[in-house]
Image (tube, rainbow, N blue to C red; front, side, top):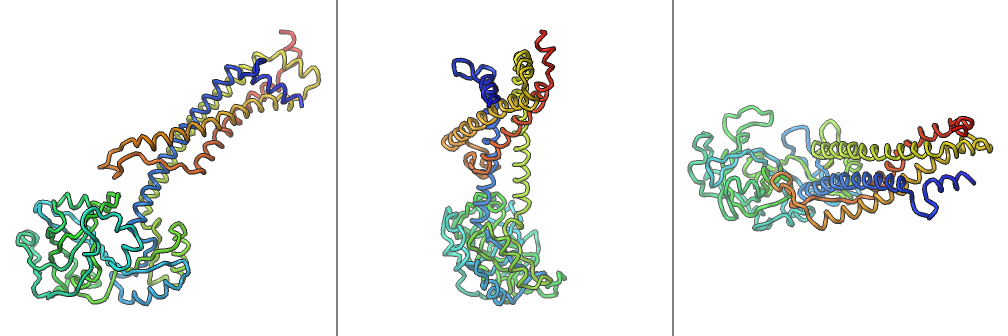
Length: 434
């Protein structure tokens, strides 16, 4: 078909090389597509890294009750484990407390997470996150005499006197350990102001358990996630049960599934099996929705900004085609006088723009891939205090590369529509008279 021949002739010179204008347009598209791929791949890298950290230190699903504690958790575990996608379940306790270590001026508010030492570390990557000590030493050996523990609640003096009796060993987040200046083997004191509250939240005349207790640091954790490393304490849940003084009750159960990215579907099935009015089942993406929602929105913003660059390169294609139309106006008039239809003339210029877009986008894929590999190899540093990462993460997802290629081709094609319309509208008589 002659339209292919004419279109190719406008792109390639008689020597068989790309014309200067065509080459500039292809390079412009290539650079913008490569920029899009690099920016989006870095954002995908942040998402993947934080998913890795969150899934390494947390369960895939949590089932809680619409009350402070529930005691029938063992029956709930049995019912949940009937699902074929469930790997394991374990009880947990979660309590907010105040911590004091060697630095008496630092008394941060922390989350104390009681886990089953026999199950949870084996089904997560908590063991891999230990930088000092061991999680094995956290195992609770049995109750001690609660009468020997302090129940003093005066906030001005509760941390002044050392507590000689230690309930159990705990693991601290690395940032938290630095804040209160403690190491493995040191003693910390935890204050639980809620220990004197009943289930409804009302103050009881006699506290159920001691308000202040001492624990020994048995391990330091570096999860790579700021909120965990700065506020998390891990302990055997049985030690918290003893300290809490309420018997065999927990905050909920933690559930591990075969595929963490199918956790939402499993959570929905478990929610249907349990009483909706009594239990709440949430997967890891719902629990950390604020974090991953913000990362996804940030990725979307970066994608839009990078797409603006591709849009600019498509205007370069538009200008190149208009220049060709102005230069080849007489040729267009001759073609039309020989019987070329409007759609044939349009197709010639649409073919040029589409060829530039495809060639530039493919080249952009290659350049973007090389840049991503280069960033990985160079390990460009980032602010560790902010991101808890040592270098810039890059995740090269095939879907991101495909979207970048399609964006380049589509925008270049759209840029051909106006020049194609202009070319098809050329009056052959006027064109031949000039």
